[in-house]
Length: 425
Image (cartoon, rainbow, N blue to C red; front, side, top):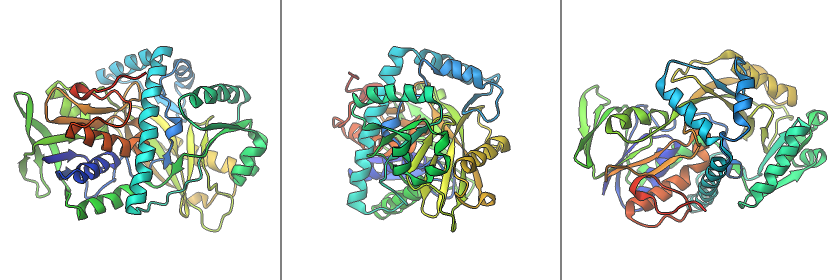
């Protein structure tokens, strides 16, 4: 089939890769001049399959209330006169119910663990390089009460197949010696040896190059205006092309992978897509000759930020701000990332070298992405991955290729639309 993939971030490019591998004639459209130049540009770098629990949980509403008004809060709601934000927020509160949290956790974990396996297989088959490290992820706690809750959560997650091992402070420092500089602040940690890290942008751009060599066409500078329908099918995509001319592109099937911008194209088609942008921040710090930067990917549970070694750089990322589609940098949140980094790791790198970035992560209220079919027989979704786009991209792309081919996907996940095959257990 001729298939058009809308979006060239990590999710869209991996979908294109698996579709091309199935023998389809694939074209990828993106408004940028290359792959991974928006949300996949400078994310946290973690393949955190074992930490795929949703934000929406019974403890979340109280924490959000406590964080209101704090510019450096880990999760910040900036209330707006925006019906989509209010709908999202009300649904988020519903997803915080214990039964919904359990359901969503299983969904996210199943897809994330499957995706990690798909990434390993893809890496073995292609030799793709992207500053990846297979040293696990260590989540550390500075609050003894939160650590006790983390220990209980680790026991629960082990029942779902996650290798979360509880570690003492001394064991945390043995895993990552850079933590010695702040060990007096630590209460303990949880380590998952099977998780990984790597540069999502480098991966996406290299995979795009490999996909192009396999015959995938990439059309850059394509501003997508709308989707054309007739009856129960899409018949084309209206664009302003790289020459600033209107163009309609047609295919046999279409994949929506435009992240936070997906609702703008799907709403006129009455395709459900309750996605709202969660604005994330990162700082990339040059390590140079400094020896205090961690090499194991770390998660600071108190501040909800991650530290990932990417070659000779340290990526510090986190926080989520639900404030619409504005991508202006909030310097308070930027400086908070740097300040926390050097509080914990005084010799982590060149403080003045920090390069800041912000991106809009496409979050559903449940944190479960939208993958599968729609009310239109040839329109498929691969969007809404929130903070886990890098973690879930390969699994989503491979499963979607199975759905489009009429095969049973090899993952226990409730796909959207007519493609739903399995119910979560």
